[in-house]
Image (cartoon, rainbow, N blue to C red):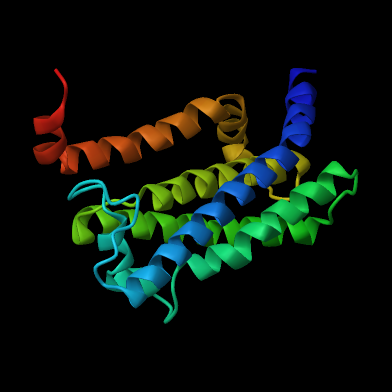
Length: 204
């Protein structure tokens, strides 16, 4: 009974998760794109989120990692995040999506999660700067991937081997705890790496 209730709760919330993630992602991608264009027009332009040597969107936008595929990374978000919004709205209208759509969405989000973790590593250890808008994209991409994967597992669109089913049940039961832990690990890596700067500017 509890499992069925949990499943129905996720079914209720998944459209809102997709819509919110999509809106945040597309807004962040739009702002980054606008700032990148202004930087190209004027190398002395300072983005609003360039606050200090560490929180510096400008440093990230001007890096080689900001156009990995030969074009600005935010273009991927401008194309991809509206898909999340569209699917979320379709779900709210009561339409049940086909299995292949859910699996395709999961695959796309898997690429997104892998990409944002690569960008996280590059930002922290190579560029040595953080972009708040990019970090917002990390959060919504990870969250969307996490809950779409859980939804696919609950619906049987993705199947775990019999030996791993207890793990799957544990993950579904503690989904929020594990997601928060995921973010805390990312935050801990950031704080540890940049503590030489943040430690000097604490108010206590």
